[in-house]
Each structure stands twice: as C-alpha cells, then as structure tokens.
Image (cartoon, rainbow over all chains, first blue to last red; front, side):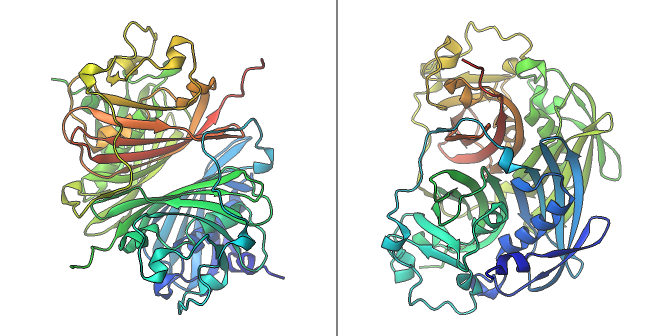
Length: 267
Length: 267
C-alpha cells in the first residue's frame, strides 16, 4: 500500500539503544550508491524510538563515509529530555565502520503553535499539473531514487539538456512517487533528493560533509514546493540551501548542506 | 597584549580527551549569562587539540542547558580522521550537567583553494569609520560582551531607539574590541555576538536550540562585514542566518541558528 519509504527505513531494536536496519538499493542516487539522507532517515527513525517526543525538529548530520546497501546498525544515545523537547545522538555503522553521525532535537510538532511572520514567501510555481516532469524521457541507470521521488518544474533544467544555465538555483515541486504523504521523517530524506544546483554551473559535487535540517511544521498532504540554491562556491566547497513549503503554502522545513566539489575539469 | 579571547578560551588537558576550562564573566550577553557561542568556542578549542588538522570547517552545536560562569569540562571524541579532514565531537559540562554538544569537521584552511563563484556579494556598507557605533551612549549593565566586541552600522537599529523597524535583517561591521585579529575560532564565537534580529519585530528570543557554522576561509585582518537576517517566524521558532565577509571582501563564514522565542506579550 505505497509504503516503501516506511518499510525501507524500518529498524528493529537489538538491545540498549542499538537498532538493526537494512539499507536497500531502492534509494540510490548518482553512481548507484544510496542517498546519504536515506541513511540519515534510517538513523533518525532509530533515534526517534528513544525520544519521548515524536517529531524531529532539528537534525545535524556529518557524513563520514558513503552509506552502502546492506545491513546497518544504529547506536543511539539520549543527551537530554525535557517536557517540550529532547535531544539525542545517533551513529549509523556498517561492517563496523561509522558511516554518519547526527545530533537531533525532537518535539511534538502538533503542539507547535504561535503566530507566523514571513519575510519571504513560497516559490511562485504554476500548479504541478501545469509543470513539466523534468525527467520525462531521461534515462539514469542505477538511479533508483527516481522511481521513488517525483518532480515538477516549469522547464527542464539546463544541465539536463546539456546547456548548464549559469544560475545554481531552482524552484520545483517534489513528492514521494507512491502516494505516501509527506511527514517530518520524509523531510529528513527529501532535502537531499535533488540534483545538485552546481550542475547548472558545470561543477559536480563529490561529498556532502554536513547537513542540518530544521522541520518547522508537519506538512499538509500533497506536493511540496521547494526553493533550492547555492550562493557561494569557494575553494572547492559550496553550501546548498533548500526551503520546503507544503501544499497549504506554509514553510515546513529549511535545510543547508556543506558540500565538497570535484575540481573543475581542465578546459 | 589584547588576547582576552585566547586566554578566556584556554583549555588544559586532564587525561584521555578530557579538558578543563573556565567560563569567565567577560562574555556575558543579555541577562548577564555567558553567550552560548563562548561556551562553544571553548569546546571547539578543546576538540581542536584532538584533531590532526588545525581549523574548524563545520561546527554543529546543540545547546542543552545555559552555560554559566565557572569551571567547565570538555569531553572530546574522534569520529574519523582523514588526510584532508577529520571529524570529532565535544560535550561541555558544568557540575556534571551537559551544557552543549557539538560535532565538528576540521581541515587546514590554508590549503583550501580552488576557484570562487559568487551568486551574492558582501554587504554594501560604508567604511567602518563612516558608520556609527550603535552602542554609543547605550548602557547595558551586565552585558560584558560589549566590552569585548565592537560594532559599526549605518544607523542605530530601531529597537535600540525604542522604534522596532519591522524588518528583521541588518548589515553591520564587527570585530573583537581589543585588536585581536579574526581567525576561525573567533568566527565560532562571533556568529552569536549580535542582538537578535527578531527584536526588530518586537519579539524576544528565549533559547538557541541549534547552530551550525561553516568556516569557508581564514579571514584577513580587520573588520568583518556581516549580513544577518531572519526570514521566517513560525510557531514560536525562527531561524537566523549570518554571512560573514572579511576586509578583503571574501566570504569567510555562514551560520544558521534555530531559536525558540518567548510568546509575544499580550497586547
């Protein structure tokens, strides 16, 4: 019933804060390796089992080594629990090697209320059914992620047409393809489920070093409107920021990642 | 000799990755309590002792309880070391209570090179000596931080004149007051050494939950040009982003913090 994300992030308690998981090959990105944020979603789901509050509010992850398909173990630790928030830590390991480490604060996002002041708004996108599927007719062998996540844009990105556009920013719609509605855990995955913006300036990313995601609300059902952009490429590094809005036009998440780039090819 | 920052962040190795430190009362913010990022700078300095590379490149901190004046202990752990980068973790505790926990990646920023592409530029500020000291004639008892850090702005911020301006953003110059030049560790402190932008919309912050700082270059000598802004206040939370540029006009750091706000006063 359209729950691939849920079954692929499932964890089983072994003992004392340790959880077993299996990294599947269904969320592979470029080069046929699992998306880093898929490993993170598995780790955060394990940590959630230890927390007295249900929803990730802030997650900061350091990607130490590439996540691979196969068994994984999540070691969790509680740092502090309070009435409204709790903070803990999780490490995801495979074959005894630590792949990623994250600290996260949890809360109950149902209880988040208070007034809203916006000094920026959601992307001004036409409705999804008036947009194009940028991957229509595009073959990306091994990139199983594209069977899981669906996109809509106003036009096919320049780099996909072989004409990088020069501006490393984009507005787009995104959702899980099988009809599973977005929730905080899906947002922990989706900030990374995107072609890197630097492809539009002819650069290619090598590794995400760090990423922090703030989940500001539980998203409404439906498509997510995303604004992604890189502003500064310096010394082989860039940041990529994403703001994610739900179908009701409310900000639901912000992410920022720090990414190491491959050196530009000699021209 | 103008080295208060260095002596106030000093750590002494006790044993096995544990360091002793002393939180002074010289970096107190509002309410007369130490700035969270001062505690973080002490913790990062301890972690630096364990790392094979000298400079923090990315630091993600979770602030669990308020840092107080007095002795502190930093427990450090190495997660992964590589030729170019190393990642570790540090917890700062006082009286057996964990105050903050951070993961950080270190590198040698002297070796960071490669081309630069900018899709945004530094704040367009007049030179510091043509700006005003926004705190000239302002008394903020107990806020010893203001004896340590110096600011220049084009005009006195509205909230300081009792006229909140409605826009939670500002460009400003900043430096350590005693002539100590900026370096990566100072940047780990300075992202937080600022009146919160939400004061300009009549809100007051309660706690910084999380902050991530990316240090992109070693800063040149002199004043730092900063652009600070909050875009979204939702459900009692806001983010505050800061971009920091050195006197040579190069981006040296980006920070983002997630802050819990006090409820608005009933009107």
